[in-house]
Image (cartoon, rainbow, N blue to C red):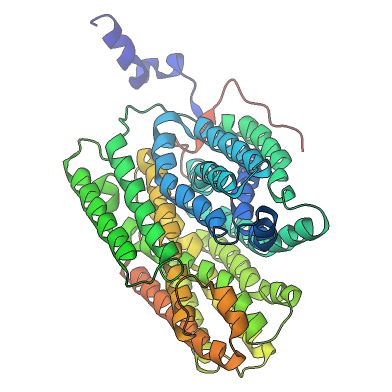
Length: 517
């Protein structure tokens, strides 16, 4: 021990630093661009798979002769992806981004193959759960890797790319899924992930070698991870089954909520008592992290909820066709992407950057008011203009909430903080979707066992218009909460591209070659 101890300390002394290890160098813009392009494909895989399945569900149900369990094709993926998201963040802090990202992609590909080859509905549901275990890490790890290689002040420009991937998948996924299912075969919506996944695997394996890995001595809190995943699964089951399989006021749903609350309490006790908890209290207790995560969760919840229910509003209330409904969704998603990109780039040059998202959310909330007052009588053009304003306001929040959250934590906690934020976004999105679904079902007199789509086709446009009045009101209320969280969030100065730091640098030698463009 006495011999190895000086050798261990040698790299930290200025006299031996140059001889022991090469000085770090800043990544060039070309290298950063190569990394971002590589991880964008992995993000696209995860985001696309959540939307491409939607239009294929009726065909899948007819193929297996099982309509009753069809919702589990979506729910199984959602459960495992949501519950595993913070786990990926912690593992990447311990073992490095590259190995964990490659593992997530590999699990996702295996799950996709299992889905395509599924011989029955139960097998497909299990395969979707496996696929979700891989998909849960794709988006969170991508955001964390961007945080590793780009300073907070410059990071906003790349957060816009994340919004672009999400929007393209949200609009293009249902269209591609419908085309493959109608003209070819439903299994192709899963087979398409094989070539895309292999390309992503090859690209990320190469470019992520540029991302530095600094081994850290951490212990994985397995008990805390299991408690968090169990509590999340129970809560999501209650939200998925409530109003559909069972009445909201029923013994089954009540038991799920009760047990989930108990497990959440046990998880909170574990956080306070564990030596190194799964979610460090220093992260959860950080007021900037807390406000940014909650603002992002409110924002994402409304965006996901509107993506799911607005097409139904277009078709059943405004009498658009299925294809027209998909096209009418583009202003909402397109404005989200455009303003997310503009805001991300603009915050690089501003000391007081928060006003952009405050003004954007205020505009979005105001735009939802006429939609809630005249949901069934407003012409399509004003509706699209209002949807554009809503999307624009939502788009201003994503880069600011993510960058501020990452700017407020130590680099060693970047992965777990980003993973936790994405976990709460996914969990809150499920909550918002469940609430909006309950509003539509309740407003139309629905009963357990009847889907929103089934009930909508039996209802009149006036009834649906009345129900969607409260859907838009609920979206406005959730965005108002998000606005309050943003107001409460401290506007800390963003760290700029100063001298090379450990997370934004790569060794100067030997240099890893970049594939020719």
